[in-house]
Length: 239
Image (cartoon, rainbow, N blue to C red):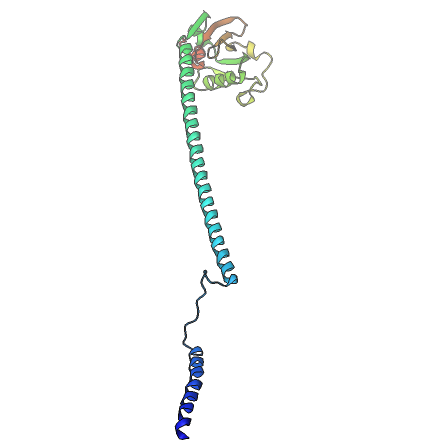
């Protein structure tokens, strides 16, 4: 009896010990966890990985597009700046040529300065006079004419300069003159008329009368500076 019972006991022990070992192995705390990879069979994980890859590709594509756009913008900016620089250089060249042409044309006119003095009873008798009155300024750019006459005749002049004209009040020396002031002995009356000959040429006629109204100086100037034209009223020789 004992001889038949022992094998059954051993078989039972072996059969009972096998599940326990398997259960022990499954519940071990240090067993490695299964890693979730993008090639996992689970549909949820596969969709998540696919979305991540698409998002990265989309971001990379947008980044490349922005970089390309920035490069195009920089290239366009450089092209515009280069065009502006060329336009500036061309404008400067044209302006320089124009200035040269204008200067040459103006110089040609001023090289032909002329002074036609038809009457001069003043230069040798200037010592008889003490005052010059600006009685008339006509023609073109009369304010400039008045300003030039004031600057020249009011500084270091043997004659007292009197300007009662309202043309340019800044240079007016007297608001009113006595009715007979210009008819007093020793007073000269000067009138200036300025006209345009051409684009650069100018002529001025200077007429000076004495206190009796008689002309003592009459001259016509072409392309002559005011300092030279008014020199006879300063005791200096004209052209």
